[in-house]
Image (cartoon, rainbow, N blue to C red; front, side):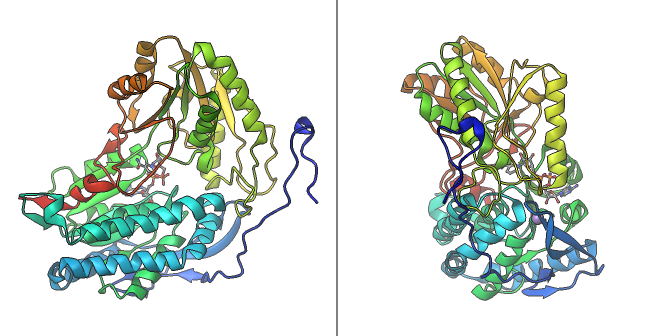
Length: 489
Ligand code: NAD
Ligand code: MN
């Protein structure tokens, strides 16, 4: 029997009985080595670090810390594979390998989803229904292009780049690896990839899958480690392109390091995206869209709708409905299918978020937090909104990367365009309105790479994704994503 819910919501809600996803089927090793030249090998330093389940604060496994020496081995393996094998493999053969990887991922989807949830803290319903299927679909989609490059870029001679170095963040671990590896392989390149240090496990599972797929040795190499490992990839002389997704701060370091070299680069960086509710918007859908925009994956989404703009006529009703909806969100065990809001990825990230919440209060903004309770153990942050904020407040200007929303109101369209564009970032935006003409007018004036209308945080392999300004340059997904991995003559 389900227990009755917390006092405040007594009349309306009950706690659901737990619906935990099982973990007994998992096969997680105690220690993971580096994946170089088709084999798992020990790191030259013999050093390993722990990967933690943020919901329990317990160690899941140990991960190899790759050094410059290991990166060099991986780049050499990738170069050999490029010269001797992959550049000579016919495009249709390349496609078969990529399809095979996609199918093997699908077969192991449940295992991948559960491991993603354990390692990252994101709720199982997201990793099961969004991350893993989308990751598979990226491989399927780019497999389809591998033997059609001359149609992708008509009347041009298409060449691969060579060895590409790829560095990914912790918020969508397997999905980000798929965004990077699939188009690189389809275009005929070989890869050295470094996943984020707090969420390496699914990339290592992908290494197992790649091994099982029979992909020639050295075509994909996976080197785990911290920022120094990433820097060793960026600075390696024999890399032709760097693809980076992560913070703007590290993106700037990377851009400086490769200045003056002939390396290509694409950077997918941070965001502070505006979610704009016009007075003719479908209010209930918009409230769901706000929740999805900022509380989905605990706000660990580069495109999170972290700045809400509501037109004055509907501001009170939207904010009241939003607060009521926040009180109903279930915070807790990410493995439980009832959970809406899982764990923050790391202790460090939780501290960053809590520091920003304090800054918001100190700068005079009015805070409202969900009345739902978070578990005592684990890294959790209760969904939080700030009203009475000023455009100059740090919580409005800076990326928090957590479940924290700032709320501003506006009267005219010109006003909201100015405010929304007044940001160093320009990754995404959302517009809620009943009228297509209002949506088209706003979307043509917002400086954001991705704009959603009457929806939020929707991703698809065929659709390019990327930012303006300090949110980076280059696009991933779709034909644009393929373009980033070829030379056109
Ligand atoms: P981060 O920049 O700290 O780390 C990203 C990756 O870079 C990690 O693998 C890290 O080990 C590595 N790294 C760190 N220092 C490095 C260095 N000096 N040289 C090379 N590599 C280095 O970012 P994070 O905290 O993992 O991720 C959160 C950030 O990523 C947020 O700002 C978010 O907006 C951004 N992000 C952007 C997108 C996008 O598509 N635009 C997608 C997801 C995340
Ligand atoms: Mn972890």
